[in-house]
Amino acid sequence: MALDEPPAIGDFPEDRLRARERRRRLKIGAAVVVIAVAVAIGISLLPTTPSTNVYVDPLQSACHPGGTFSCTIVLDAKQGTVSASAVKSVQINGTDATSAVTAAGGSVTIVATLPSITMQRGLPDVGASVHPPSVGAIIVFLSDGTSVSVVLGAGGILP
Image (tube, rainbow, N blue to C red; front, side):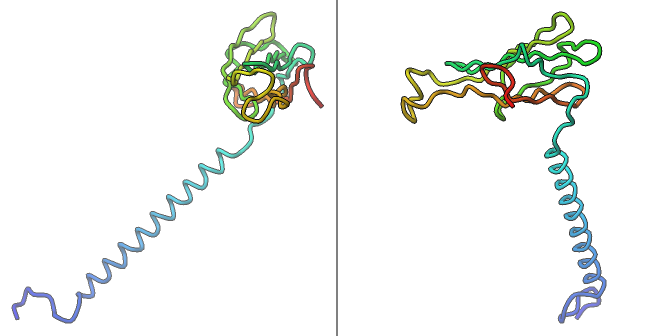
């Protein structure tokens, strides 16, 4: 047996110590990654803060059923004015909507639409007696990180 050969029985104690340290570092690294992912998911699930300055005008806002489900949302400010750049995005019934935002007279008008199926006397996949949605749970996300939410129907804000 040469002097540079490892013993036949097992590893050197130093090799076992290095392997133990390597496993410990991997466990700590995995724990850090798991904690970071959990924090990121938790932050993404936090609800947005309701706006204290912007509100939905109850007399000018409504949803319109049809081949394309659309909602007209008019935002006003309690103090000052609202600009079109204040609107970040719009969701209707949990789905991102296509929206056109215009500002006039200190308020902002948003026309948000969801594509719908072509209809003839009801919805073809569930029967002629079922009508398309006419109520929208609207969430308008504002650029300052807050949001405005309301439930709209054809007659305006629903209780």
